[in-house]
Image (cartoon, rainbow over all chains, first blue to last red; front, top):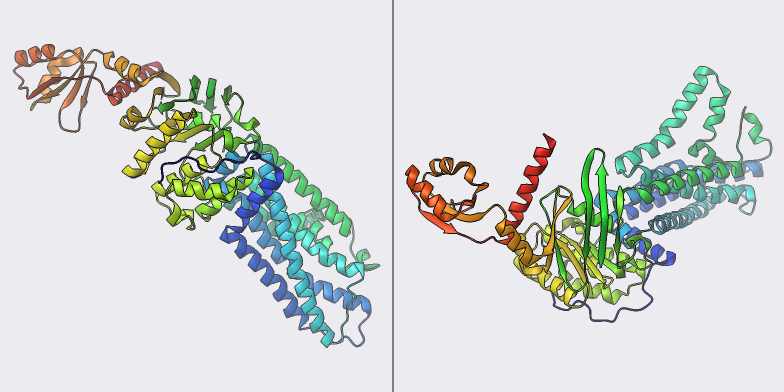
Length: 281
Length: 306
């Protein structure tokens, strides 16, 4: 330990700003191992599934264009529900890890207003998740399209019905990471946050569908369409004319599903932020 | 400058901090003393805006801490060792904190060097010893070159070198005209470091005075102070009885008797036939002043409960 307190003159423009908080959160995100692990799993699952399923493409010689398009989308979105679990865990851990280790006190000492730090962290989580998901998805698309082409299947990537769901998969993954982040911020505990997130994704749909079929209640089935996994599922579904009439009751389309999930993220996030701003840490 | 006005914090039925008011002035080192659970850390957390007071307010440099646009330049705080994600390296932790304010990398290098963390800066904080965690916390507190320094138990877990270094740091910051507020349970450490002390017991301010005044006042409390060594302490102290307000065993086997003076104790010993090996009138140390002050508080409080 040396004896001087300060040598370099401190610059005059030192102070908080949102871009600086984003920079800080970016340093934090990339300097934790669990981030890298989660994103590595996300990439491997996304590309791996695309290659695996793309390789099993059938014979495309007498396949209509709709079926070829649908096959490319389904091959490249097969891993989304798995990826959702991974980013769900990441979204929770990225904030509960701060509460669990005491880091949150350093974070909120640097930004005692708290809102900026929380929003910056959410922004970094969203941007990173979206970029990683998009890159992984489109590598998978390129690989699976090449494999399918060998079987004579040529999907039309310029068709919005094809590229919108592929983009939607990344949007869904990102929104789910943010939803999990909000849940984590609300409950502050890693175990609790992960349990609630996975419960919403995996358990709630099963319970609602059992209850719905036991009671033969259409409103329960309609309610189920608003679950994050169901509403979000519409974001990456290949929809062609007449496809949705197969199902009874309420059906959300891609944009409807996006709106519902986005609203859920905003509500949970706003609630969590309000509570986090005033809570003792 | 730290101003605390009628600060109160309740956790359910328990009052952790009870109508606490004091001022910590720039240019001097103010010690914050009190037994564990006295409310020192809670008070410091409220000053830093981490805990919300039930009532009352605290300001730093004239404003609530949460209102600053450059909080790390206003106050540097060490509130607990390892307020750090255990998976992150010391370097990345400090770098992320510096980034929030646009503090240059050079300053991060500087505080790492100042706190002697060069060799472990790239290691994960999870593996740090208490002393290393403490140095990292101090490094973080110094990042913004703050006007006010708040350190909660800064010498906890430090080796003797580190203890001396913290003392010098506190003195130097105060000499620089900054406000230095540090808590410690090491009274001897305070005597060498602090100009003033604020003593907290069970959430209330028991004393707020220059350190010399505090020691003098503590010495008078409860009457004379005599160190007594006796082979049959039970026999002697039964005879001394209620004449003494306190009889405390000391580490070397002797006892500190507060109340009766040395001639009185000698007379009692002669009357009862208890053998005496030592009878030394003594002044109060800071530690004893502190002990007598907080003991009185404990007694008062338990009577209040009854």
